[in-house]
Length: 443
Image (tube, rainbow, N blue to C red; front, side):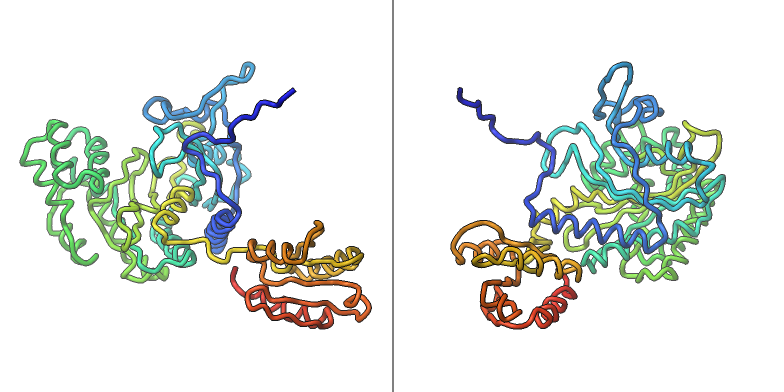
């Protein structure tokens, strides 16, 4: 009976990489993780599946439309759509076991049933950090976050990028001063500035029912430019008599003052009054990060300050500040634009080819190399020697060690550099010196 062949395929919106690209992806993830840990953030890992009542505590909106939700027996379950809501549940659940301020990072997959389109994934990795306070959290944390962004993207190999910073209280206080009732709707429109332009923002504000005079004031406010000092001076000179605006200005001024002390060069951050962040839970400082040479990529890292992380799960105020890198989307965009490429990415440093009846000796040498932390593979399949060298070449394995009866008799190995073609017979201790030098090189 013939077996029915099903065409192998995956669902749209899911990423699957070949090993070379996966190595590059994993390297990016490791660099991000190492930077997060360098700043004292502790790892956590939460379940991909959460109780729907927990995950959808806020309820309604676009989130509920995009969530993957299903029933299993009597349980109403959902796949997590971000790492922030699980963090809120985690902090509330483990409140008595956590030391505050709680600095955590999490790197994991999240799921959103978004409309299938280029650059958007339904399953993707997020790399988040957050600093959570118990009742209070010093504003100095808001000034430290850009230094984590700076360090991370420098480690990823980028130099020319800008961290744009604003404060939602500055915007909310300004709108309140203008007597705008629905300031959150205005913030969501302003957040679209990069996509729809200033004229598009004006049109949507008009559709919201704002008069032309108010719209022009908003446009003028968003267009305030200059050095960080000039922007702050400009804001101060507006003499806006609103307590929320004044608090936001003080916070923005404080953050701008201390960012440099955290080691971020002035060329890599700027105050920008058009940065709003559309999500409702942001209340203070907000961040967006852009690669200057590739503006069409949009923000590659964003986040901000929120007043109360876990209001739906615990009767305590847990303010926080954090950022997120959408790694899958960023990786996909960088690969597409050829900003990063899979060059000479390999894991195995040496392939051992046992000749004749020397499999036992080949395995013994591999064991010695692995104890020295040299990534080693033994080629055990039959075939001509040319096929075996070709295997090493295709996988970018830089060295091959050949062990035949003559090598066993001489207590030696033959080592070949695949790139140069140089081949030499020597004692294993000498070969080890060559391979240890290779281990120090970057992958």
